[in-house]
Image (cartoon, rainbow over all chains, first blue to last red; front, side, top):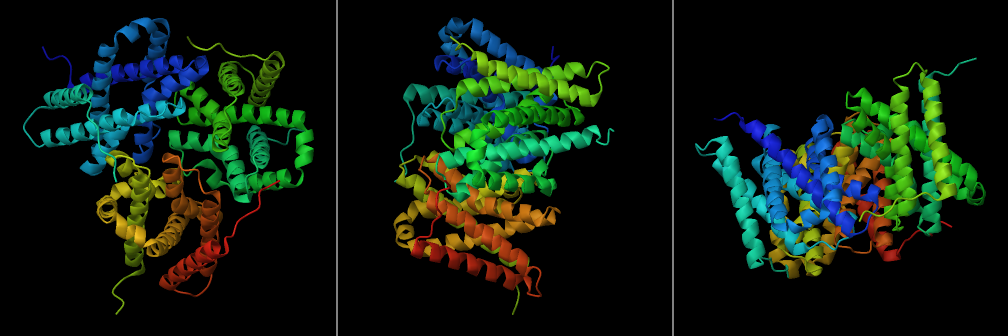
Length: 206
Length: 206
Length: 206
């Protein structure tokens, strides 16, 4: 029954997250009426920006996407899908939000685990997990000169931090790895939905 | 007759490209009335920005220009030349355009070859070649708050991508390395001139 | 009497500099009315931005602050101190300026020495020292959309360059390491104060 190993499961969900990020980058670029070249750059940077910064900082180079051509193929697929089925993706906003949340959750866990595997401390690992998840979106917004929706981004990042800490704490229990990943991602999705529904925000520092 | 090896030829043309990039950075900074320190930073970043990002991403550190003091000397020379002979460089616009095109072509090939030599895939190599060639100019424009001339930059990058692919394809033939480099650069120059003359552009993604 | 080794002295002053930089980042963020998350990011980036860029460029990864949890603790302390004692820090402007100058001087020396230790040339070492000292502040100003006070930053960087060169020259003398560090930092502080008092600036390049 259990043909997938944990590593295979992570790999496929990682590709799915990359696909969703590429789609979201392309859609924003199209909304801003960028040309083909600009939209490709935005889609690419959104999909790999976070993992790239993490890899550069922890010294895991050549950076991840260079070492597995499937990432480039899945990003190109995301771009084509976004270009040809734009209407459909725009109608599927809730589905996209769900995929995006799964992607974020998984990118957090992957970045965190990769950093731990290098022997770095858990707190650095949580930071790197968060950067993996949010920096692609930060770059996307910056490059299209979108005034960053501070609220959205901040909850975004806080959700990743919380998710990362939960993932670390679950690692101290007897829970198995697959279940640990699923629980963490479920919590991340739940917090994000609650944050949107109840319009959570932080006060300005004064 | 053939005293130069292919590697020596590449090295000298690389220095020439670096010189031209430093000049172009300084000239733009001077036009923007930056002070001496700002102009030096812009000239330096224009000259080495692309290769630096490539080296960081592929993990070839310390980055290239740190390991050969000739690059710093040539950049300083470019800055002095631009400062003292500014009028002349501005009159030599067509010559500068030619050198710039040669530099771009060569930076593409050098970045591509360096990436291939690390065992990375040809598609990643073409991307790294393009980044080597265009990222210095992207940084320069961003730092002086120039609204990027999207058209110019895009054709710029597309030319590098096409040049990189041609270089890879020629690598499958019996053609020798010197000739392969010269043919690729010639094609890149030709496409750039055609692009300027015929005002090529891309449609916005909609 | 001399319980501290030179390395220990440097380490503690480095932590002090990191603390001051975190405070200055938080204070600017608070002035701009950023929220808690934004202010944390700015404080962190101000404190470690320069050393991080240096480490990435010279290939000393994982970057420095990841390998010693004391840096994260001191940054968090700086943030809390800035949040709770903001009035006090704002009254202590001259004290902060002094600490900031000491921090800058020390970051320059540390970055320079780390680069030399990798076998890179003195000129590259001076550049890396300067980047270590000023890039955190550049990132801070850029992220809060502060129009960079060109004058301030330029003298800032020039002071680091001059300090770095003096440090290198003192290395050719019989002077001991502790004294060499103290002399260099004293000179950097003196030049900065003179620059502020006499309002030194550079002419625009024309």
